[in-house]
Image (cartoon, rainbow, N blue to C red; front, side, top):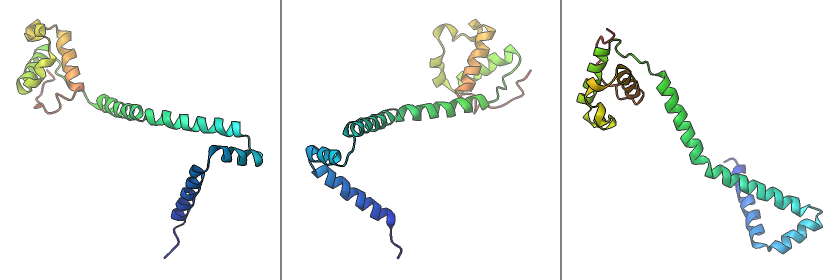
Length: 146
């Protein structure tokens, strides 16, 4: 069976770490100085490495959220908006959405619940927003382009 050098390296590093952990700080500093090491530079570099590690760890959720946002944003822009051209068909589609998905009614203000009170621009904007949210993805497709 071939020798596992990775495991050997791990065991060696672990033994060194235990030895250092068991040695007092005064003894370590004395040994470093005797070897001609710049202990202040070592301390500064160690502090910087630890600070960077803590910062990276704290920003992990931020990086993950950013990646998820970018994935969502790119998929949103890839969607094709095939909304009806006529405002009458747009109003019918909006009414159909709220009939088939009543849970979305809460997204519409009380003033806009009478779809006739919505301006043409409001209807189109609302449909585009519903499309971006994926609410129109499973709607039956008709020839709504008229």
